[in-house]
Length: 193
Image (cartoon, rainbow, N blue to C red; front, side, top):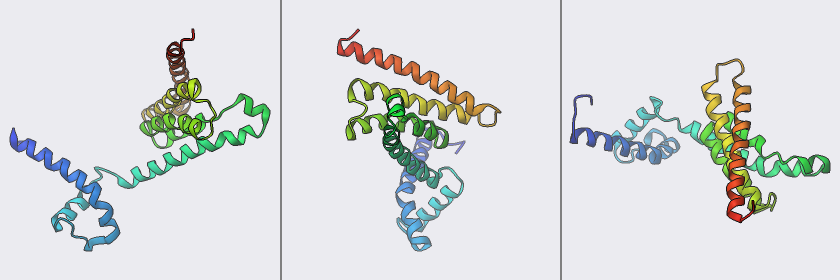
């Protein structure tokens, strides 16, 4: 591959991309039916098997992260119900940020970002709390920042002694800054000063 230039290299890249997407489609069938599955000829399944053995893509980890993200979304929607049962705590605390931060730590920054964007909006649509405008619309970027920053900093500082604490504090500060900017934007669009 190092010595190919021009069209040959472009063709090689296209074949790699095609093989990757065919692997995403065919590999679950290969796992289900085993070695007897010979979709698109025997060479396709052998190539897919080698592709996954080399560790270029870890499909099981992606599935695990997707399932965990869905679990964190469900926890983010249900957890405020528990705190609302105690009026003193329920009036002060809306703990949707806890599952988002945990998702950032466990699944990574991109998953934490998506979970943080979805939790307040879904909770607002399903339950009506927090109210959609300005509450959920300003909370969504804040929680997304929590999830993204915790995931990215935790991966970068994983071996450090205070890595978790540094990533958590930085995420909280960044999230509050993002919330402030989102609030200013939403309130200026609504015509409030």
